[in-house]
Image (cartoon, rainbow, N blue to C red; front, top):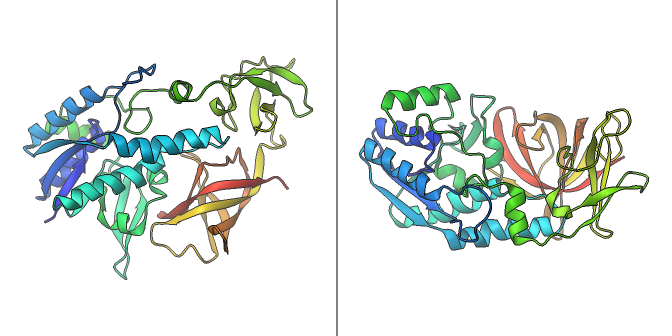
Amino acid sequence: MSRILAAMSGGVDSSVATALLVREGHEVHGAYMKNWINEENIIGHCPWEEDIEDARAVADQLGIEFRVVNLMQEYRERVVKYLLEGYQQGITPNPDVMCNREMKFGVLWDWAREHGFDAIATGHYARNDVLEDGAAVVRRGVDPNKDQTYFLAMMRPEQVEIARFPIGSLLKPQVREEATKLGLKTADKKDSQGICFIGEVKMEDFLRTFVEDKPGNIVNLEGKVLGEHRGLHLYTLGQRKGLRVASNLYKQAYVVVAKRPATNELVIAIEREDTPLLWARRCTLNGISTTGADLTREWDLLAMPRYRNPSAEAHFRPYEREDGWAAELTFTAPQRALTPGQICALYDGDRLLGGAFFETIHYD
């Protein structure tokens, strides 16, 4: 049996994950990552005190030790800084993916290792597996509606080795049912939809607290001014809602197809199957990260360009350049709103191979 630190967020998923490890006979301790408090008075609900109370209550029910680990400084340096700099540069970062690599399986694991733990467990819907050669791998969770391997795409091989995902073989209703059977306080708690370990805070509200608005023109593909935006950092490619531009005469709604930092213009167009700048098959990836697979060779694989997007067949052709490994990724079918800065998760069947950042989208 192992000595495992369970990352408890105060939600039902991590609660059940912890309970399953206790049932298996492991020595389990619970820990809440304190990454943020609402000290800047951000608009929105930041329920860290409530989450700690719920996590502690579950730990007490399970009869395990519980502690709060303060990682606020590291979170600001490794996640918040990455988030704000990305938006200021005109790209769309993903704080949840980086939180997993840099915080849960990074800083928190460093702390856990120093305190004698063998592994870290989380409530992700993903599965652990071991190949014939003994290598640890991550596979998709069995619940297609909850699979969260996309958010683990930037993990490193050594992190995969010490990660445990106890609920990956369960469907979400089964997790709720298990929590109810155990009488856990979090059994009926609503799932959090906020930024990783911050809470119910809308991204727009978070950004507007730290990044000054810089209004500019909203234009169509021909350059005609249709309205005014509040700042390019508040919009993302493929966005339909919140543009404050009325539909055209045919009641067709607009969609964001480009951001032009040089002129501070937001470009929108009517969405169709052939809308220019909205659909692409080919792109360049950088910052390639592998969970253990050899991503320095060509693959015919599956690529997931954003969470909840269906995986799509693609050809992965890596090459080395001065700043490290990059790759040309060519999808079999055109993909909607591929976005610089976002994460592309890479799979071989249900095995997570790794991930990379979208760098350049080629519209040819």
